[in-house]
Image (tube, rainbow, N blue to C red; front, side, top):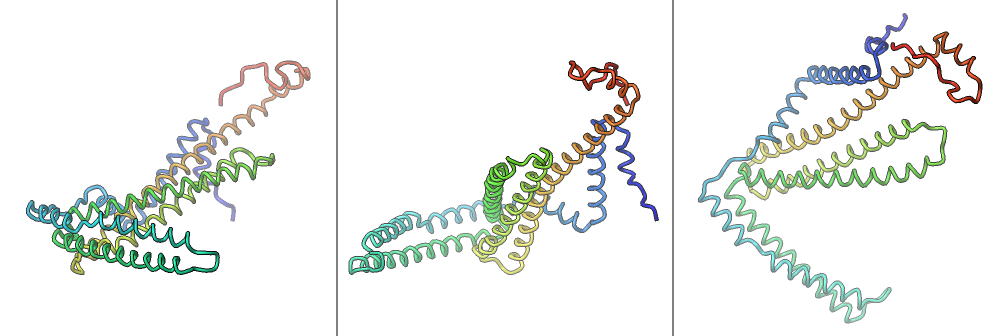
Length: 311
């Protein structure tokens, strides 16, 4: 059975380069819309997640509850004792390393080691007391409040920024080493090198943002538990936050992939149309006659003397 020609290829066959690029992007956009319509459940979940990202701010608490929350947070703040305890731990660890030998630890080293362990226990106790006080303060406002939503948003955007930073650093190193690796190769076109780097860039951002999503979901469990919610509220908040974060990451990656695919499709369609026009021009009998009549080595050799026709 003969293979049927692709109607999209036939549509792009007789277009100018600019029109071919625009048509390729239009075809890709229509294919994306049709795919979204073919999977309504996934599309609906994605739209719900984006709605939560834009509009979900949490329930507003009363002024009395807000004032009590601020007072409880200030009472639970142990930042100064924690800073002093952390400085003491660092100092004792430094003295221990200075007093220790390569494979031995004398009495002075053992003393500083014991002091460092004592300071570490005090630091852990202070942090536990602060976390318990903050958890009691958060319990008063609830996990569905605006405070919990704001804290979850801050946690997500910190993880998101970390994922993008990882992708940018990795892409920079990939670009550097790929340039060193392929600098001496002449059998590869510039377009192939650019497309390879573009694929590597998309892979790095996919890896970085998916890793950031995993980090956020891991931290989300402790964040929800710090508000001491009932199981129903904890489940609702966790599902809503996870759906919103997943939708945001998916939207960012989809935008990157769509822009990359549109650019490649547009450039490919324009290049194909230009190659077709050049091939038709070279098949023109007047072009071959002019090529034969033009003396070799003279200015304009290889260029036709007539005005080419527009196809």
